Image (cartoon, rainbow over all chains, first blue to last red):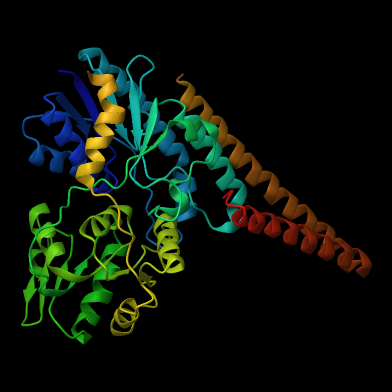
Length: 364
Length: 72
């Protein structure tokens, strides 16, 4: 029995939720798991795995911008990020001094690695996408990523290998030899599973992501949803807004849904309307949904790239929230030219293979 | 200090220095153009505008080439 330290980033819940199947697998194999995280990521994992040990481990300030111009704020955040990473390195030393660990799993936490304990890194972004005018910065980021990945024994990429079935497109393409020789393409990893139930809900709208863009999208979609024929559920992703909960014959607005409720609703939905965040992408691929409409968070270059990539591959239709016309865009999303994602291996097989081919060697 | 933090600090310093050099370059060129314009040396103004257009086109063409070859 080995002891594993798992540390996900707390920028949204995506990092924590994709680690759930890995943590389950480690526990099934009778390993001890300590989870070092903060905020909502910590809260979700505490609820999911009460048997684990937990450490509050602060991460980085979130650089999301109130405007659509995310990049300048992100650049201005670099020094703050660096200071946070420096603090993270010191905190990690203190954590490692108190307990013996056999493996460290860092989900996108840049400073969580050790030179004496095997460390692996989870990321779907081997390559950062920037507007073309910033190509020298993008090249620099590729080199920086190579340096960073050199700190880890392996880099686990929750995507298919580069090629026609890669769901993250160029984002999961290694750009340096350092990255290439460490990259392990596990396939999608999500805590959402397919259920054998009838698809009786016409639209599921999932509003998520950082404020204030979350509220902007909520206003746009709540305004337009009544123009659609059929039944719909809107998840506001905002637990504090219970006063906004409403129910009419056609549409139910829910302030918040638990993981299980959300999984059930996603399984029931014929069409999903959501941000093009990679967590939602993996959920849609896991459930094998054929109809979806993606609305990228303005200024988030990753989501904007993925939206454009899916349009180009003719997998799903995307629309900017500034140009959204729900009836028209839903009509377009149903056009036969959009085929949905290619069939991919599901999380269960992926996590078994990941354990056997990568993790087990450090634990047994 | 941790080497990750050192490399990060060097990278950030490099980025900010590059931004300062770029801004200073733009300011100097604008000054040159203004001086040439007020002294009636329109051929110098045209030369500078041409040079900026060529440099800008080469820069953008490099970006397009990097995208087409999947390097970015």
